[in-house]
Each structure stands twice: as structure tokens, then as C-alpha cells.
Length: 100
Length: 485
Image (cartoon, rainbow over all chains, first blue to last red; front, side):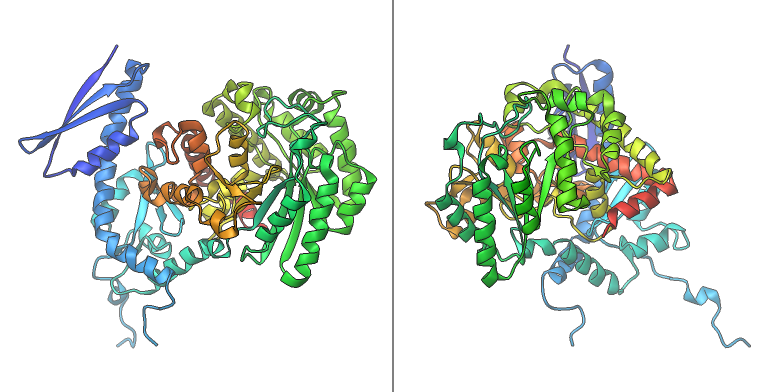
């Protein structure tokens, strides 16, 4: 039996990439159809063939946690990207931070 | 009036700044965070958001650790950036040296008929499965083009001792060339030890050749896994081991085990057998999806969950042994721990990013084909030549190393840009493994949530971190494994 759950996210609070990444991570248990209307993202989650109810409910719960995690990662990455590039530049160049 | 400022004067007034790091849930209560160089720390679940929001109190006990491991820095501090850059450079320094391991498949013939054989061996009499001296010469031309100051030549098969004349030829020729090249040259023969003779041992002794063998466990298990005429594989192994140790030195012979369905209930028996035979470690190895392991459906005989139970049971027992004073190492864990607890990279091909295929190890097959890794030639024996980089008789070093087959595999599987891997806190410990994923999923990257490689390794990484978090003695033992000389 195919099971479904619909989750709605406010687009002011969540980036679409975050939902896509969480959906990707959950693909072993469910598939997600993500749509956008009226400032909301709607995620229709459907169980994969052979996934029983308790496994599906667990996967939906994990999906919600992953959305929060990915949103946090999204913020962290955006904030630290310039310094990450600086560190990689330092690692692979022959210059230091302080000029001689 | 005191000449010194009050303590409050030194308290950091401005908030800290975040440095790049990744995180993943370790369990229901904790997150693992890893910095750019792979150092990790475990923090309670409710602390992650305040950490990233920069609302963590400056007086928090967590701050000094986060600062010392370069997860955060105080404004304008430059040392954390220099340190991270240095650690990253150290971790990746192996890349600049390029290919170290050169595998010569001198024959595909074998005296064993293991149902899980990953290389699809041939019967002992089929001479067309032997490497020729012309191929060996051209392969050696290739070997000495590698810029690596350390060169390891490993002879594999089949059973390489069935073409011992070719082993001797390659060793002597390589040493002759090395008089001029001046590399740190090492030789290994991967052998079952069943065909070991005094002549072989004398040659190995003379040329400092190390033997790498296979031991699957106690006699009944080993002989069931590794059939040969006479059903005496284990007996021959034991006799060979004694002779080889006496001739070459105790630590010049190592052994690898492969887990079959018959091994699963016998983790302790297998480890006890390694102890009885005087080994100081074991590599708890899962079956790989290549060769006869696929044809005979051996690979499908157990799943990742069951193998993980086996691994965890074995590891628990090994930790118990260490606590009782017996020094014994689980080698896969040791490789992972080296990545977790030091800035070094042990260079294990399966756990490398970019993938180790071709640039850490390369294979010269008995038929002149050059493959990106041992697994690539195993795949080729099943009719899949995706990772065949060329032919040693027809193609130059540049044509092979710059072939699309190799460059595409390395580029497309790069974990820092692969879906899911790029955000994963365990990415610094993991590997790209394009050959495994191609074999299993017909895709160099594959969908990681469906990958048993990802599932197995993620479980191992989490398990090792939890073991260290739960018990100081275990952590001390693991530190010893990670920092072995």
C-alpha cells in the first residue's frame, strides 16, 4: 500500500535546496514531490514500494529533522564560504597571511 | 593598587566567528562536528544551534575546545587559519607523490577454487593467463615514470608463485633499473603460501620480499572457504607460515581474511586463530562485489547489517583483548582512526578522496591491460572494461594516466562535490570508491542513501566515535592504533 504525508514549509524560513537535499537523503524510504505556491513549499512524501508503515513514519520524522539540519548547514556554509576559500588558498599556495 | 588587570579584563568581549565545519547526528542526543582537516568533536544536541547562531556563552566550557580544534576563532585571529591550512596540506600531501602501489598480475592461474574469488582465477594449466617478459618490461618502464620516491611492487594472481619465473624476472629487472632511479623499492607477493618452496624463500630473503597471505579462520572454516585439491589449504598455510617466518623474519608475513556467510557466527574463533598463529592484528574484511563472488552469489549471502554485527562483535572482543594486556589491532578501524585522530592519511585506496584509482595504485594485468585498481581488473574479468586505462604494449604513460577513463572517474566521484557526501561530517574519513559504486549501481557516484559502502562506513565511523566517547580506556587503545610507528 502506498502511504503519503504532506509537509508545508514557509519559503521565508527555508531554502528550496534544503528541502531537495533532505529529500535526496530520504530516497531509500520515500520520494518527495516539492511544489511552490503562495509563499509556501509543499512536500508530498510517498513511501517507496516495500516500505511498511512504521518505516515510513520513521522516514518522515527523519526527513523533518534533516530539513532543520540542512537549513542550519545552509546558513553555516553561506557564512563560512569566504573563509573556507581563504584556507584552501593558503593550503595550496606558497604565501602566508602575513607578508614578509 | 594591584599592578595586574582584573580577570574580567581578559574575557573576550566580542562574539566568536565561525570557521567552516560540518555536522551530522551521532545519535538521538549528540552531534558530531568535524573541521576542515577532519578533527572531530561530539557536542550535545541542544548546543549546535546556539553554536551556529553565535549565542553560545563565551564562558561556556565548550568554547576552549571549539577554539583549539579550529571550529571557531576570535575576531582577527590568524593562527587558526594557518593551522587548518597546514593540516589540510599535510593530509593531502600524498597526492603530490602520485602512484606508489604497482600491482603485477603475473598469472591468473591458481591452485585454489574459492567460491568468493574476486579475480575469477583460471585452472593451473592454462598458460595463456601468464604475463610475458615484454609486458613486464613495459610495465617497469611505466613504474619508474611515477614521481613517487617510494615504489611498491606487489605480485598478485591467481597464485603468483605459479609463475615464479616472472616474479623473479620483475624483481631483478626492477632492482637493476633502481640502481639509477634510487627509489625506496619494496616488493610484496600476495600468495596463499600453499606452493612455497625453499627456492622461493631463498629468493625472497635475498631481495627483502614481504609475503601477504590469506587466512579466513580456524581450519574447518578456512578449508570450507578456500577449497583446493586435497582440502588442505589451512594445513599448507600453517606449514608455509612457519617456514616463511623462519626464513624471512616473524613480521615479514601478513594475512588477510574475507568474511563469508560461514564466518558470520564465528568472529571470536577467527580472531583466536589469528592469535594462535602469532599475528598482532586482523583486517575484518567484507566480501567485494566482483568476480566469482557475484557469479556464485556469495556476495549476496549476507547484508550490510549482518556484516556490521560481525564487525562490532569482533571489535568488542579485540578491545577486551587489549584491555587484558594482549596488543592486537583491527586494521580497518586502525586506518579510519588514523584519519580521525591524526593529520595523516594512511593512503588506503578504498578510503581516499580523490579516489586512489590509478593515482595511488595501478594494475598491470597478465594480458597487458592496465587497470585503475585491483577491483577494476576484477570487474574486467566479468566483462566490464570501464576502468581499463589502456594496454601497456600500445599506450604511453601519458596516454594511460591522462585517459578519460581515469580522469572522469576521479573527477566525477570527488566526494567534496558529490550529493550528500559534500555535506557529510564523516566525509574526511571516507572515500570516493568509483569502482565499487559503478559495479553495484552502474554509476561512479551512485545514490548514496542506497549505497551499502556509505551505510557500512557511516556505521563504522559512528561506532568508533561512540566507543571512544563511552570509555576512556578504549579511547587510549584507539589512540595507540592511530599512532603506530
